[in-house]
Image (cartoon, rainbow, N blue to C red; front, side, top):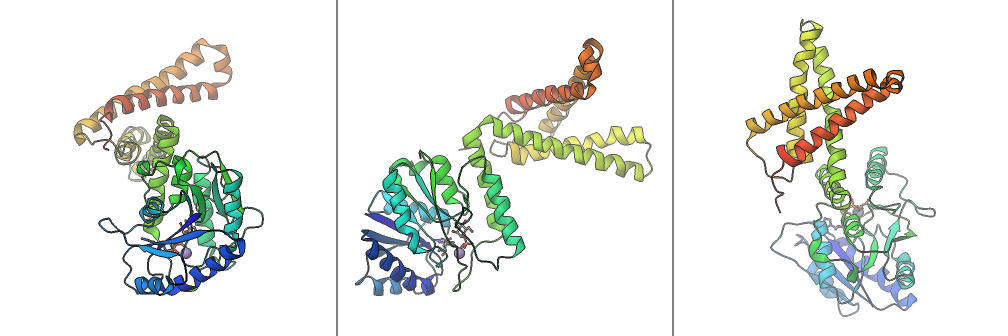
Length: 361
Ligand code: GDD
Ligand code: MN
């Protein structure tokens, strides 16, 4: 027995065809199932449509309330409310081909502990040709960003199957659409096994994907990186902020000269916008989950630590090139050594002191 969880929002026009198609496939494959539609109070007649299907098909509807409308939370509600431990999740808009469900179930039979993904991007899989270049690009960048977290070729897919015994449902904290990725990363699965799918664009209703969802995805990724890589994720994020500060530094260095300042004054001044932008970005992104301490004091501390960091950077370079012949020959390595030492110092000062306050939640 498997529960097919289908999150819906304004899908009344698709549900009848979906239920019939799924039922055909499950009957032919002799697989027992129930379909659980999780609807976020759509302003349409889905309740009546489901009721009209109930005499003929094993379908029921769950209408969660008391939380904001959300795809991921709906999927979690469905997983919790399922009659069976085995759960398959698919979209309602007929994008996901029911024909592959038996193959996905077979993968679970082979290894109950695996996470089974329906993939558009593996050999044999496909997506509609009329995708815009923008959508294609977006999807691929999103997939690339998730690659350190999973071996799946299509971690963005909303078509997957799993045994819920291997997930601690209460520990899930998804933001946005990528509930499959959340489950893969936080679940105790032995691995990901994939089945190729031919993804079809919806013909009825419209997608709820938008810019807001993309932004949520970046925040979601951050959480998952923190979960998987802990302090290393923060360190890399901190490094990226540092690199952005370098760009700000250069821009202001030229801007100030353009405005008539000499290059030495420009150099001395451009440090300030750069260090301030680093401080602000670390405050709201790198350490965004931590409690925010008073601005001015924290900014001063950050400037102080950056100055020590810079002295260290310079000092290491000076020491290495004057004391070690090797580094005098390969000065670029001494420069890198200086940057590495300073970065470690700055990061340690930030994480242990400047932004040290306990995480919220
Ligand atoms: N309950 C509930 N609440 N369901 C929702 C909500 C919501 O807030 N928003 C969307 N859904 C349902 C839709 O009704 C549909 O069944 C499914 O979730 C997918 O939503 P679409 O609006 O069709 O999204 P999409 O096609 O852009 O996204 C799909 O493909 C992505 C990869 O390209 C989803 O499968 C995503 O999970 C997937 O990442
Ligand atoms: Mn869709």
